Image (tube, rainbow, N blue to C red; front, side, top):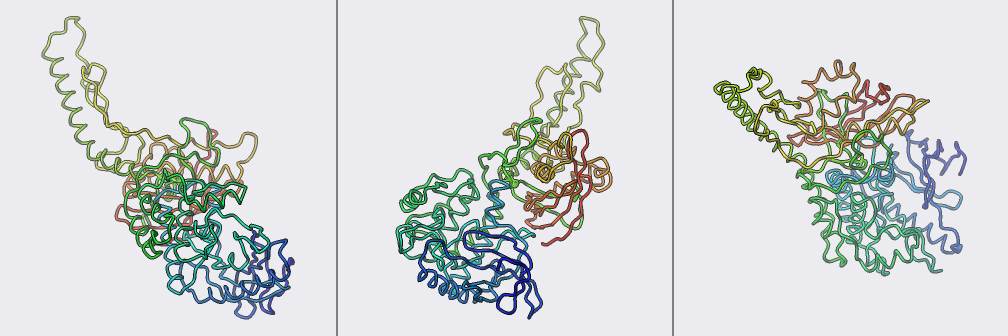
Length: 537
């Protein structure tokens, strides 16, 4: 089974090993009968179990796979077949180019509330469909949620952990797997139910937002199991609008939890609401210490730097989330508030300038010095975009009055937002994959709010050619509510790929898989070109 080209079940030709974990090995395989690419997962039983237990696990896995094959849902990985090979069950599933959510969180940090709501709604809709068929997943956790190349989430491995005895006590008293995402009643020995799946999804969303599951990640599984059974966890700090729903999903008693259908509906509804500001989480990947430190982790607002002015498809996403660092929802509200205040402030500044000038002209100058130049007294042009635009700059300063002005010019107050530092090129060598990926994440943490900081991260060629100039660039971002980037991969010496999700002001959502070319200028990696590979929405 460990060799490519092996034939499994007289039908499935192994092509390449694509992953392995506690429950088995995953291969890309070729279905010679239907001539299609499939994923083949050969399950393994845990070491130390008796021959009788291993046989029972195999029978249960075969049965669970047959039951799961009844489920057909857009956000569930379908099971096509189940065969036995070398005494072990093999699941034949749809091949989905993807990464597990656990890897997304590990590499990118916590998600923004908006991104967590989107992924959660997709997974919950699949689980709700399964519950209608009487199918309980029993092992909802980040490792069993796949994030596809287009950014959509799919749930996999229905019932398999139960069949193999994962995260449960065996008859020998051994504990297999982590109980971090178990429901309290399951940790106490009760059979899993649909309500248990609700709890596990809540624990998964909690981990996606907070950076770790509700009861931590203690390496002592027995101690962790006791904490789970008690059902007491620290309240989430970064959940924003998801807080009340998370609290209900993580209720200690199953009867106090919502149904999975209710969860799916509420998460979908939450996606359209502005989320409350989240406590910043440090980025997982190191960024250059130039200026203030980057605020969040990898759920960042993302949008193709170069693709900014793409007329055909607008793109938005969450707030300063984990590089998805998603910008807190409150920032968008603040942005609009600033837009409304800017004309008023400009008017006040102009009025002050006129009064000062009039006083200076009508009152004799005791020192004999000349009257200040009207051009210096007049309010200067705003550094950010015009008042009519929805500026993405971090600090749109309205106008400044010249020094003779007796009264200081009022400026809108706002909570300072840390600015991600530009990603420097590596001294003495070509940038690594991590450097290239970090540069893309850094750029998308800045837009759409901080275009003044984002603009210099594009090369001059890109600024004048692809974006169409600064005005077109600002106009593009004015129509974007939020943006997020996922599945960011650097490809040395100067390439990168990412899935960018744009959320427009009119609630349209567009996901684009985009390739980038980056170059080093002045010690900083800048975007020099971008190409949309695929687009949905």
